Length: 262
Image 1 (cartoon, rainbow, N blue to C red):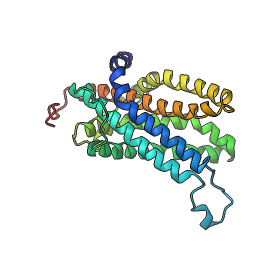
Image 2: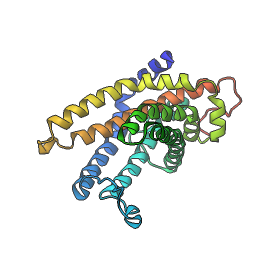
Image 3: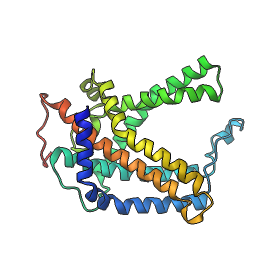
């Protein structure tokens, strides 16, 4: 895992200029849309648990705009991930501007499926924490860390569907689960080691930016920009990591030849 993590960072740093060029315009557009949405819709409201049944079905203020923004962001992250999968596995050069095409949409749907599957253990852990802890906010807070580990573990177990989708290959969730049998915790450890520097640095910077620049209008959107940048960095690193681990897991198994005609 240490060798793979080191190879991930080497690959990422070697292609950082191409990544900046390919994602720069999308990042700026996403940030502009996020700023406009925030200005028009205001802060996202929280649902009222005591609201009547009909009122509880209505989205809180700003939630609809946030969902649309996240869907657009998912397409951009999918386009970056597809380009990196193909660069690692097929040695394709990164495009000057990441295309959002049918392959990116299919990849985004696959990514959504993996995320939905990873939420199942989260719901179980939260429910157990509420039952065993007597309910309340403290019980949910205790469940946050194990929920994050469980979610990432399921993503690691199902990750073969992602590079396969980028290469237009067929891979079901059951096949991915079988392919990563006995490798889940090793893959999880590698992902944690890989993402830890980004997560720690972004958390510290968000604390500084959130407290230090809240009263400066021109710098008020820096936390939002940092959050978008963190999502992009993590998606790129995971795409490289999953490409390398998928290639190693696939060694010795019968699969279609990796070429541009796949």
